[in-house]
Image 1 (spheres, helix red, strand yellow):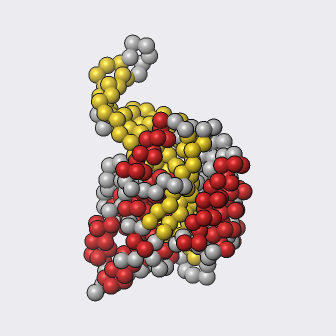
Image 2: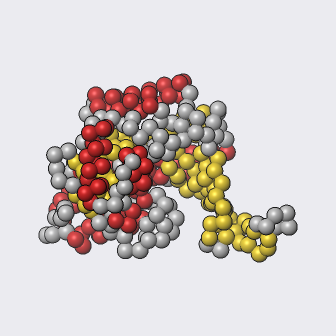
Image 3: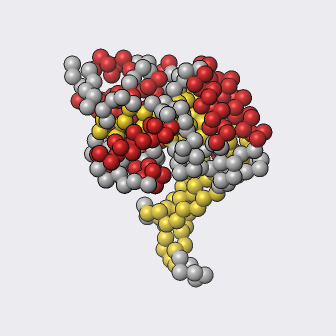
Length: 332
């Protein structure tokens, strides 16, 4: 297990503000309708929610960007919104939080991805989704590649955040990875089920236990099984490392030609696991860009996720709290 010195932590955190992180992926708007229930509908046996307030938060790749920004790095979001009111709301959030929106492309042929959660008396009653899973058009893909090409030379790290909402096609994935490798820019991937094996030649591949088990056809019920499958993924993808998130069991980092590192969770309280994976990939990208090793980045990302799941709702990592938590375990 990595044990940091306080000087090393100060060195890494002091370099966060100099990093430029490109985040390419599926951007979403998380919409919340807050209300109360006092009766059952006469039309069907369902509760009638009297909406009292509405709020909006970053979802999907947008939440990764929010976490990168919260850690002090410069983030360059690259993705698609629809030409609709939800797209306008998402762009307003970017402006309010001083996030660069130049890489967001408006596509009138698809809706902005929106997850609406209706909550009454602090319980989620139902969730509705507006989305298209169709692959983006060739013209939109070309615009994304053009923007990535214009930024890649000054990029510290590139994150591919795939929620299978149609942005990251196999052709776009390969083109972006090839471009990043040409400029020696590390590529970190947060995959979903589709295109799982298309991320060849990346630096770090970060699936969760269920995704790995389903795609590799093996149960991850022991340390030995996790390492075996992780090394199989490294060979299949020709990547440098695989980081498997294991929920309450923490993280497993498997690197080429190194022993596997098991990183137990740091969560003391778990109120909401939403967005924890976004926090992990964001922290990994910032720490690695600042010169941290994969194992150092994984330990810091694990601490960051532990802080985030202790909060209710999707919130970004608080770097002051993160540094304080790491200092408690650091040596002089």
